[in-house]
Structure formats: structure tokens, C-alpha cells
Length: 378
Image 1 (cartoon, helix red, strand yellow):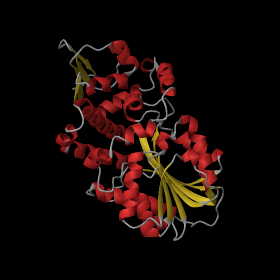
Image 2 (tube, rainbow, N blue to C red):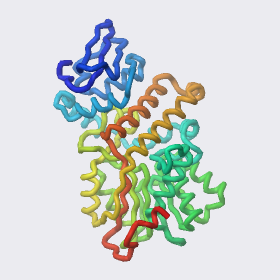
Image 3 (cartoon, rainbow, N blue to C red):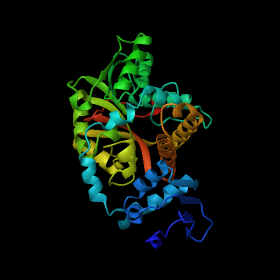
Image 4 (cartoon, rainbow, N blue to C red):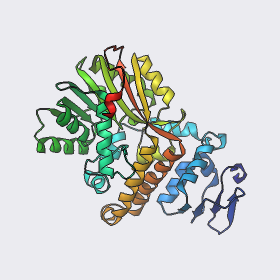
């Protein structure tokens, strides 16, 4: 079975100290198993088995995480890694809509330990290589809002508003009226507190609401959605754009910020089980197709792939700086899960198995927009 691993240069150290080497060059990483592992599951549920054993301290990883991501990406389409794909699909379909709540309702205190002061939990934007995480998150919000070319008095819907900082900056800097929605009770509570503290209750309304329950029709001038589309699910891509079309005025603009996969397929089994239950990373083709079906027109698409890799590196650096505080509330398995998640995701962006795109689109045709996009960079 191991002979099928014919790509990369790495070594596997087994529980009985036997070693297996792949490739003719020095190993770029090592997988060191502390306990016996069921090899049939290893080759059918690769990511899930690796990650679960790592979380439980039954596996140690040494070396370059980017090289691991390259190897897993190379084999991700191979038949011998997909033997239980149908089983995993059936399991995922039975999961209830705890999805976003299970990830974001861990508690504000946990995220506050390692996110920046804006509490932004999405890709930052590094204008300069030495930008701090806070500076880069402010850059991201400004970059996002500039693309929408907001005008004072306009109505803006923020789908997946998180802890509210984008909504706050939109109201403060551009004088727009904002409705921000989230289905996370923790995020909603904190966002409302921030709005009240800043005296912006007349400009910003934060709601605990699912996008599917939006009742507005042709009401908003602009819509923004940052880091939420990944939770919609494959079967709901069309429904999402249908709801956006319902709430936007004719000719209105939307800025969609989302992680994409390089090809259509099942969600990583470990991510689906432990990190984002029920989530789905669509491909570029799927997103553009769904947009077109609901008469949205693409004006601009920008990849921020390497920005997200750097963001994740900084999150992981911050996370590891506060491990003593994390250990006061969480066990070692939880800590190893989060460390692996942040490090492996950074590597996935670097090797290109996933990407991060911002799309600027309009509902129907709008011929009255600026001829150029120079305004974004002024």
C-alpha cells in the first residue's frame, strides 16, 4: 500500500521504530507514529486520520508543513484516497445546522487571545510586508469598502458581520446605514456592545439572523460579505445569490470575499468534522456559474491567496504565544487541533490547493459605474 506514495521526499517512522522513506532526496518532513494506526483508514480517510492522531498526541510532525500540503494536494484526486468518499458524504448530510455556531461560539475570550484588536477572523491585506496584523486587517476592511465605492446615506448589508468592525468602519468613514447579520450569538453580543460604545446605534443595526431569513426587497444599495460564503454549503450556492438579488436594488453592487478550492469535491474530512462542520469551499467555476444564473455581472476578481497565508502565520504565532492562557480553559487535544488547523491552512494557501478571492459584482447591468477602478487605490 505504501508503494502508492510515489511523490515527494519524506519519511514515516512507525511505532516499532521501523522507517519507510519516500523519494530519493533527503526527507523534507517526517511523520512519527507513537501508536499503531489502521492503514486501511489511513489511505481512505487520510486527512482525518492524520489530524486525529496528531490531536491525540499519537502522531508527531517534524519538518516543512508546506511540503506536507504539497503531497496531500497531489494525492487528493487519487482513487486510493477516496474509498470512503460516499460514506463521508452521507455523514455530512446528517449534520444539523449547528455549523457556524459550533466554530464561532467557542467564546469571544478565546478569539480575543490571538486575533487583533478589530477581532477580524478573515484574510488580512498587507500593503507592506512589515504591516502588523492590526494594520493589515484595517487595510483589508478599507480595501473591501473602497471597492464598493460607498456614498453617504447609502444602505449597506453586511452578511456575516462577525464582531462588527467592518460595519463600524463603513458607518464611520462613509456615513452609510448598515445592517449587519450573524448567526453566532457570541459575535452578535460583542458587535452590539461595540456599536453602543461608539454611539453608532442610529447608523448600525446588528441582527442575530440567518441570511435565508432576510425579509428586505430591493432595499440595499450595496452588500458586503467577508468570510461567510464558505459556510453556505454546496446545495445552497444558488439560494445565497437568490437572497442577495432579493435584497439589492437593481444595479446594486456586492463585494464577496471567500475562500475557494481549486477543484470541485468533498470538503476535507477533518476540517468538516472538527473545524467547520457542514462547510464547503466552492471552486471559482462554481461561484461564477452561480452568480451568472441569478443575473449578477462580474466586474472585478482579485486573489489574495498569499495575504491569507501570511494572516494564518501571524494567527498561529499569536496563538502559540498565549498557550498558557489557552490551557487554563482548554485541553491539549483542543490546542493541538487549533495549531494544526492554522499551520496546515497557511501551507494550503502557499501551495495553491486553496485560494482567497474578492469578487465585485452587480445585480443586473449597471452602465453608470466608474469606467475604471482607480478609485480603489486613491
